[in-house]
Length: 283
Image 1 (cartoon, rainbow, N blue to C red):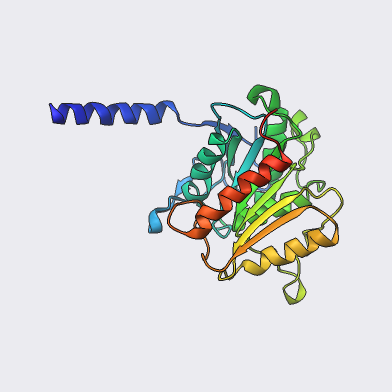
Image 2 (cartoon, one colour):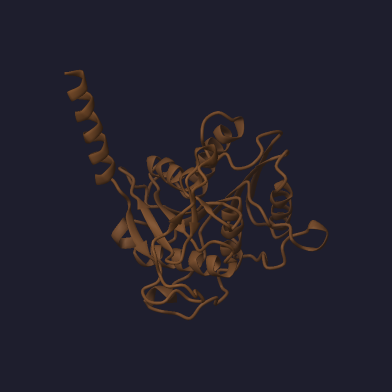
């Protein structure tokens, strides 16, 4: 009886997971701009170090949708990190989407192009925000409450789309591309590559303006990329853009929101409060 019960539970669990598979939205209806390879399924890496699932190659960028049980009318496009080489798709994607959906946000995990396709990644991020905005009615989203959240290289991408939303990085394909690619808010968690300017100053492509959205930034002092958080915060302050910066003494890099480190448990709590301030807890 115990074996039969265990089997039944396993089958039920598998069916439940399968039934809850997120909806997928392909970003590009035809050819992916600037992509030389044909569209194909994402290729996963064999490396499962630290129990992280990694996507090694994306040629058909897409969004995976996590709908909340009680929507609050806001949405977040999530950019996983991975040095622009891979995507840490569960650690910094799916797990974060589940957390946000639990708070009422409609979460969209972005599979942007890798490896080493930074310009393609920016095109994908711009297109993702426009597509979500174009389908706001379908998902019960306020089109003025669509933000972006990124980790590490994904934090770099979130910063890029938050500062280059007016740049025409690709030719318009449909009506969605007539909409703004500006996120309403931006959350950068242990962001990288924001200090590529002379003498470790702000990366030149990140041009801050009065339209730059408010940002929540988190890092730890022992992270080798921590200077990125400092220079971005200073640039935002100089332009009087609202920013909240937190730096803890230790935590390293690449922890997502998994339990076990102070950093991974601290930033989500503070980010939740910050989001409520800038987005609101209800429509």
